Image (cartoon, rainbow, N blue to C red; front, side, top):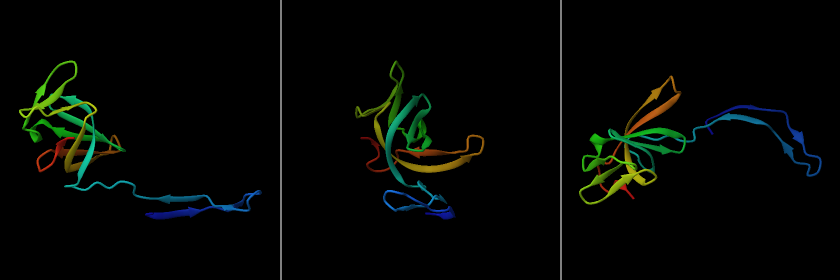
Length: 124
């Protein structure tokens, strides 16, 4: 728990005798950090990169420049394909490293930038 804002008046439950208190609090449920490695599913593939969704974080972008071993393949089901025949397409799980983030006030959300540079990163 981060802060306890208020505790309301208790109400006794007739059958059990339990007392229920309405509680208002603020907490931190997810705090990704730079350099953290996450594994999530690909949501969207574009020529310039990949969008990944991770729970409440809807804006994780994996730029084509950060996945140099992969080349974009257009078509009905676009994908990124590597020389080793490894592919990244929609709904595939990808292990990636967070490189940076920024707060978008207009959308009231964070936007994250990710990379596959590193050992054991990429499609699973």
